[in-house]
Length: 402
Image 1 (cartoon, rainbow, N blue to C red):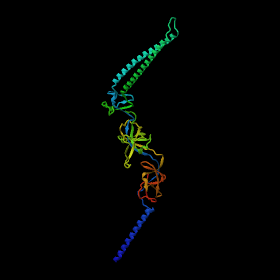
Image 2: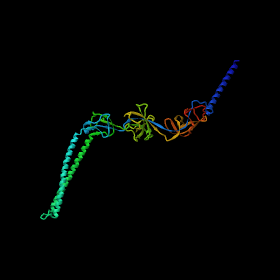
Image 3: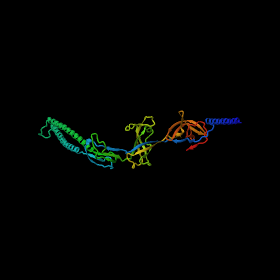
């Protein structure tokens, strides 16, 4: 009796084992052959036409359109007076300060007196030459025909003597004119030096610094005595990487966000991107994704098109520069693109079955990537790829993202 029980138990165990093996085999066949799969968590999205707009983020600093820093010049001597105060508005040509020009003024006065004396001598010489011309004319007339009976004929040699004397006067007069010209040059040079002793503003703007205690040394003062910034709207300067610099063009729109105003923004446009690296910063910085290499930085300038009255020189800002694409193209989210054996692929859901498509990718932005070949508009691509996806896989349920 016990033997029969054991036989029944053993038979049941064998049957259960065979059933389990058959079940596993069927499931394995279904998974590998694509006959049926209860799928969960697959999300798809339609292939769409979009214009790829790339956003480049850089940082910069608010600076004036132009500025003038005036350093003391030791060869000009001491400053006699300052003509402006801090926060004072000035126009181009307004005096900022004056050096002591009393010594130069004395030299100028002396040179003017000397020139006036020489000009008087020149006038006397001109009168003498004019008188000599009259005498020579009269002498020549008398040497040809006596004007009255009894007049003696003037010998020809007297005419020659007068002519010789006239030539000597003319030579002396030329020398006098040269003295006048030389003295006038000295006067002009002194007058120029005196004018340069008054330092003027070169721009319309505001005086932001007046340092009356600035020290003049042989190499010039280390700090400016006067600092003027332009009254024109502020600009933004900074540097951007070589990867960004090749994409940026003039007139591209920029959104400017000062760090001191968290929820405010100003509009601007790209004014220029230098063709030459930033020498001041060494031109290169470490590039995090470059495997230890460097990236070259290029200076740029952005014009602020909105009112800049609430901005201040030195504000640090973040800038958002939008790079427009070349028209609409077919795009998919980055998550849809997979790489298998060095080939770019996406999985397209069609009639409940996945199709593996090899694709050719193009340009991209932060969200989407262009697909030049391999998909069509409105086809559904899987955007939750995983290692279990394969060609011919049946999908019984999925979510569609907008």
